[in-house]
Image: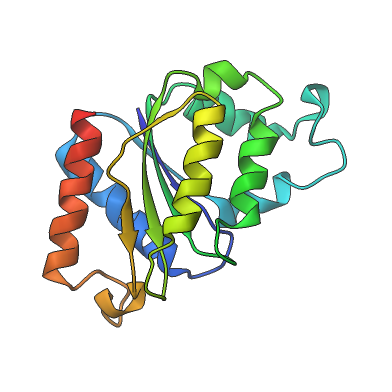
Length: 180
């Protein structure tokens, strides 16, 4: 199983548009089950006073962990640039999961990272921060990180990626994950 994680809770985000493209292409290229976790949809189960107690873990989050994350062997993390790093909700998501079955959820698994930014750097710094966190919890990160700069320019008015070069680079990134 491969899980694509849209690392923002912002509604109608560019990151969600790119993540949806990854999901579609992975389903076209792989016979594996492809899951999609959009933090916009689960943000309410993350932040509560008991989030660091395995006995009080939110039921929806525990269900996601048990039925999607633990069976997954590979992850695609797409993260926009927020204040020179990743969104706090993505860090909170990882933190909330770390209190229950950490090794089963993340240990020995693989990931690729895509940074999304309107600016020039494509969230390079954020991907490095995320790499450090993922290494700490046992995930091996593919060295080919994809920084997408000026992300809005490659999208058409319906939110689909129109730029042929961008489509080609994403396709190569997906191939790297599948052979990783």
